[in-house]
Structures are given as C-alpha cells and as structure tokens.
Length: 108
Image (cartoon, rainbow, N blue to C red; front, side, top):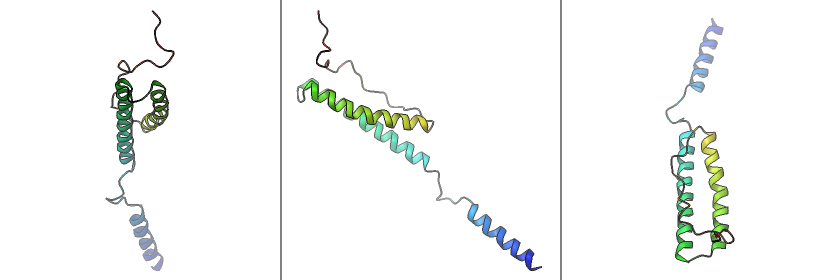
C-alpha cells in the first residue's frame, strides 16, 4: 500500500513540474517584436543618413561608412527574423533619393 501512495505523490509532483504555467509564455514573440523594433530603428537611421547626405550635413564618404555599419547589423537582424519564421514587414528605405557614392557618378 505504501508504494501506491508513493507512486501517487511522484505522479503529482511530475504533473506539477511539467504543467505549463500562465507566466511561462513562449519567449519567441518577445524576441520577434524586439527584432522588428530594432529593424525599424535601423531603417530609420538609414533614412536619416541619406537625408543628412542630401542636405550636405555629412560627406558621401561618411554616408557610405555609416550605411555599411548599419547594413551589417540590419542584415543580421533580418536573417534572425527569417530564422524565426517571420518575414520582415517593414519596407526597406528608398535608395533612389540617395546621392551617388564617389566614383559612381554616371559619366555623360
């Protein structure tokens, strides 16, 4: 009879440990939301860099350096979103308004 009580207690403990609790939500949605927020912020920074270059506040060389640095981080965030099965829903910045890089000017 003692082994039946012991088995019942063990089963109750196992259920208590294994049963999902309300506070044990899957952390993936939070990670996805954070990645989307970071991606949107990076895209905003890229737009600001292009606007600064168009306004003459930064040089074309500074613009390229900044875009390279942000581009690497943006690429890793976008890949992380795709790895989680999410498609990035923020459109990339328009590149048509950006000034050409040195040496990229069209020769007429």
